[in-house]
Image (cartoon, one colour):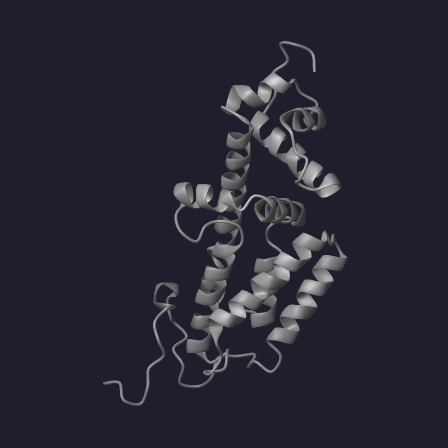
Length: 221
């Protein structure tokens, strides 16, 4: 890269280079020189934006965790529309698979990054935890609408959904095979769920109430 040439979005250019390296070589041998060489920039560029290489990795993990969390937040709002399997599949496939692969492998190799991410973004924000939380809220809302059976353990089902993503990311599956497997698995996990809301259910349930327990026959009217 010639001196004096401005680089648009240098942080994102470095993050993209990191993802390519993790996909090709894994996270175990990452160095600042390898990242900048892959990005096609001088090594000093990384240190112009981060105090050290560990700080760079934290910056990457925070950036990607924020993106994944943002993509998951609207899932509970989809309760009552489409199909449960389709909504879960769309949410699972919202993060680019390359990003998902890289951040999952990196955090498996460096688990201390989860603490750093949550110090910035809050509890439950690291890795796929935000997806798990949003999925549980969504399934609770669908259970209130009768599109998820009343006896479904929504937290366990949310964990299963995230487990599928984690497996796909760690094994490095890519499009379109990963898409197909994820959609087939979501269909299998929700097989037999009602396609439409059941009579007498509240179709206006708000996502902010999604975590509340279902009413019982002993509850006051």
